[in-house]
Every structure is written in structure tokens, then in C-alpha cells.
Image (cartoon, rainbow, N blue to C red; front, side, top):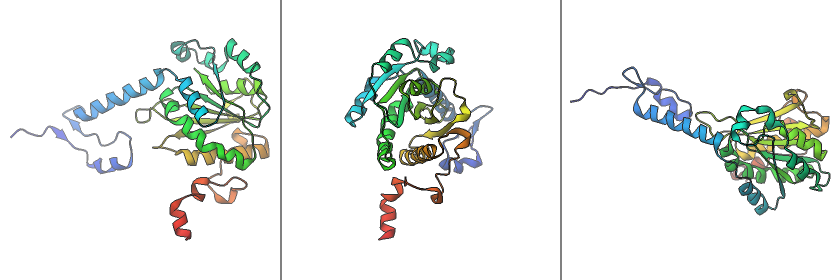
Length: 271
């Protein structure tokens, strides 16, 4: 009978609680074939997320189907290679986009949403529109209006600052693909800035990270964003001066979490 060359890790039972690479075991001095192939697959998925072309029209069509208007813009990075090697170009609008925004005739509104590809087009294709659909009802709760959603190609977070400055937005919400990890090639992040201008420091932003079904779900992220927007308008600040206390019900004011209010489980308990 052939000898089993695999040495299993006694922590194997913990793998049911995390997608992290733990308790992989070994085969001699190396990894088992399954673990090695899984690593190679995750690495390929992470690379694909970065290089996958951003399907702006696909997102624009999905927004139209949801009854939401949008505008397409792009950064000064002419292609993906330049975007990755020149981060500074991803923070500025190209000439055509500046003209687009100037001619858009967008009426003054309260909140500006920007959807940028960032470092994971995969994330934005999967999560941007479902999240927006989940979030928009909160604007009604807050009695806030929204600009047409701006879809930005080859975008860094700071690109939202220039867009907001051009449209004279009170607050900008940048939805963007996060740097893919080996277990999360499709993670979306949100950056919130009050009255931003070009050169706005990161200390003046709030961030909500790892938005995806396996991380922070759409409904919980949508409430967290709505809570931050409500309180940003109250203190007219974001960043280090705006602490996220949205998980504590005693700090809930006008906006209430819809995922609790409409939870079938809670309704059964209340009945």
C-alpha cells in the first residue's frame, strides 16, 4: 500500500470560519497540490480584477434600468498601464471629461455619487449598482437630493474631489474597487468627503471597506453610509472629526437601519 505523503494540519477545522489560507498541510517540504493550485487561481483572479476593462456602459445601463441618470468621465491616465504606473494621473480629470461636466447642466444637489473602477473592475461590475439601489432610499429618509451618478474610468479616490469641486457638491461619495487580495478580488470600498477640493488629504475622508456578500453586506454598508452622511451634514465635516458610531442604536437619529426594520426574523419576534 502506498504511503500517504500528505501531512494534515490539526487546525483544519478552523477553515470553516475563514477564507484565509490557514491549515494548508504539507506534502514533504512543499504545499499539497490542491493548496498550491488554489493559490495560483486566487493570484490569477486578483490580476484579472486589476486588468479587466471597465464596462462603463454596462453600469450606465443598469443605472438607467433603476431610473438613475449618469455621466461618464475618465482620468488623465490614458490606459491601464499608465494608470498603474502613474497614480497621480488617476487623480485628475482629462480635458474631455472637464468639458463633459461643464456642459452637463447638472442642477445643484446635496450628494454626489461617483463610481470608479479603482484597482478592481471586477468589484464594481458586481457590487456598484446593487449597492446604489440599496442606498438610494436612505436619501429620501434624509430628504437629500443627488446629482447624476458619475462613472469614472481609471479613477483614484482623489478623482472624486475634482469632480465634486466642479459640480459644487456638498459631499462626495466615491465607490471604488479596492486593491484585490488573494481571497477578495472583488472588494468595493467607499470614501466620503465633505466639500472636497483638489489636494484634499486622506485625514478628511471616511472609509467603508470590504463591501461584498462575503464581507460587509450591501444593506449594512448602505446604512453606515447614510448615517455618516447625516452626521457629516450636521457637523459639516468628514474624516477624523467624524467618528463612525453607526453600530450603536443610541446614536441613531433621523436615518434608521432598513435591514432591521424590514427583517422577517425581527417581525416574527415582534409578533
